[in-house]
Length: 115
Image (cartoon, rainbow, N blue to C red):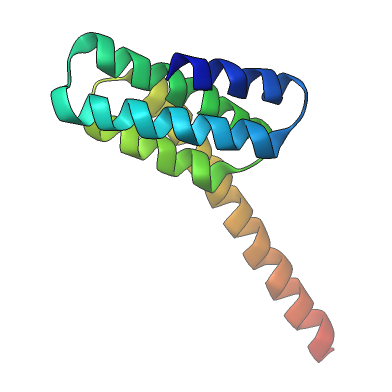
């Protein structure tokens, strides 16, 4: 699993979002199932490592909804992770602001088309 995470990081460094995502998803699949099954500290730490790096990559590419899902899933295994909670909150804030902005733009478009 660490190998997949490392390969994903290399692809991310090269700006290859598609391949980075593919390897992060594989690392996530492996670490999540192990962490969910036994919840030992080392296993949860491995899962967290993937979640943190993958989540930050998603956020850097403005994939906030997917990052939010990722953080929410992780918090089901480790409820007390304040750093992940903070990243989740950041995603929720950005998604909320985007929705609000979209609503304002829609309202303005409706007003201008009726004028």
